[in-house]
Length: 484
Figure 1 (cartoon, one colour):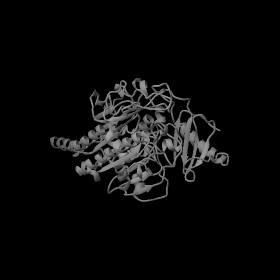
Figure 2 (spheres, one colour):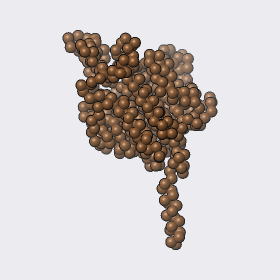
Figure 3 (cartoon, helix red, strand yellow):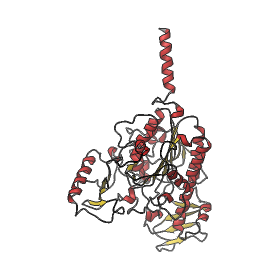
Figure 4 (cartoon, helix red, strand yellow):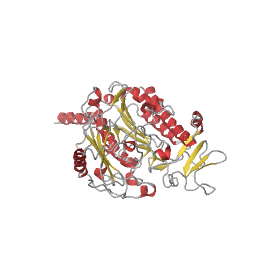
């Protein structure tokens, strides 16, 4: 009996040091999700951007897969990130709208505790986990990232943050205002050129930093570096400290989300861009791109690049009027379910496992990244996910769809894509519009009147999916319903 007990104990110890998948630690890939905030589809050079270079983001396309039909589940930050982190349509659990400002301090608003994050699954399987950057999944104690599967957290909880502390030294800052200093409308630049006010949006810049300190885990910290650089620094440090074990790093930059603050050194690189609005945006994206480059360089320095699955994407389309961000060749912007609000740059690199320099034109979703990561780690995904494992589809080219359809709902806005066809209902619309995306990617030609049968079939598919969703947990516009 003593010998049997010893054998059982040894077996239990052996199981405890192995992963939940049975893979040895050296076989388990590191997983990094790099999320840009409000970066439009048409900005990275690898997606056609021409105003400024993005060599490090482009390197992920050169060394991996560029998705040209990559979608997120919502046209704004928090809801999109809720789906990315859970692998489920956020409307399944009521996370339909974007908490902003004081809403972030509401103890009822955040990612529901019944939803398990990718970090929770991976941590339970032996991964070290970290969130560096923006959370925006609840701003009160019970929603803290440390309680949602992340061993470490360095960042902020709300929707945005100023990049440097006041008085914003070494940067040019662009702010939205309702009225200029002389009482007029338009644009005003301070005599020293350090501040630009613009009334073109008809609103004030949100109070991003109110009750929203920068935190290390749960404790406020003082940070003097530009946040893009600070988040890169923290990501590099996490990689080096955990190089001997598999890790999951969720590097959630807030760049190039407003407020627009361009560092002098980066602004100098783009002196050829005459419009200061566009020049600040270019400076911010270039600083973000350099951050991606530093993370990739650290992986190479630690001999980890080939053992790391890296995903880069934007959380939604760019808010063009606010930031100048381009979503070309698509119409629409952040907040809309037109292609410009929901189709995003999405790249995946896993050297030696995923083909290099591949363009994948089939429809994929941020929902697919959760099961892809779990299966790469040797784990079995839960049955309630809304995504598919991308890896077998990427191994060899093919024409079979990766996912049959994609669904969206944001209050009265609604959309569904199936194959090349998409139905869309705008915020104020009462009927479905119909577009053929391969022939009309800019959604300029509504074919609903010509194809009523197709509209009816797609609307029925939308209704079927919508019947599985729940009512929003907090307020927003009236929810979508049946459309003619």
